[in-house]
Image (cartoon, rainbow, N blue to C red; front, side):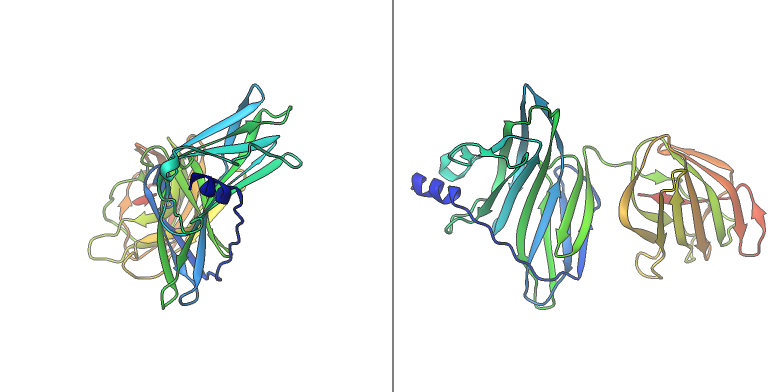
Length: 335
C-alpha cells in the first residue's frame, strides 16, 4: 500500500479549470499570521470555483544551497493543489510531514527535480485515487542554487476547490498558519485581492473623537506615521445624531504615489470609506491628505495632533461657505 501511494504521488498530473468569477472579496485585508482570511464572491450558480492563494518570499543561499521551512500549513479537506516554483536554482525538492501513515515523504520520490533555465516547479494534487490529505502539515523546500545566486525567489501557492451555491455565491476560509509574512495574493478567475500577513496586530491611526463646532468642507493637511500602517478604510467620527461622514479621501506623497477612495452612500457602514486595495503608510514618511466631508463630522480644533501611531496636521480647512481655518483636523481612524 505504501508503494502504491508513492507511485501515485510520483505520477501526479494536474488540470485545474474554473468558472468565471464576477466578484471576489477577502477579509480582513491585514491579518496576523495564523488567523483566518474569509474569502467570498460571486460566480454562476452551482459552478466550480478554484481559489488561489500565493506569496513570493525570498530565500537566502548558504554554501550554494537554499532551504525554507513552512510549519503548520493547513491543508483543508477536499480537492486542492499545492505548488512551489523557484528561480535561480539548479534543482528543487520538498519534504511533507505527516503524510497519513507514512510520516515524512520527500517529493519527487526519485530525487530532486532539475531546473530548466534556472527555474523548476513542484505540484501536489489531492485527493490521490480517493486518498485525501488534510490538517496541519510541515513543509520544507530545499535544493542547490545557481552558482551566482545569493538568494532564491520562491512562489508558494495553494489552489482550493469550492462550489458556488444556487445563487452563485461562494465562500471559504483560508488559515494563514505557516504562510510567509508579507503579501498574500488571493485570486479566482480574473479577480484578485491582496492580503497582508503580519506578525503582530496592526496599528491604526486614530485621532480619537472630536467635538463641535462642526461644518462640512474640505480638509488639507499632512500625516507622518510613527510606525507602519496598513490601510484599507477611513472611518469618520460623526457628531451625535447626525450622518457626519467623509465623501472622499486622497492620500499622496512627494514621489507622486496616490490613493483615493469614495463614499458609498448611507448604509450600515455609512461612516466608512473603503479603498479598492489595501496599502502601507511607512514610518517617518510625510503624506498629504485631502478629505471632503459632509453633514456634521466631529472636529479636533487644533493645528497639530500627536497620536501613538503618528502626527496629523491641518494646513487649511475650507468650509462649505468658503471660510478658511488653520486649526480644524477631522476626527478619523485610518485602518
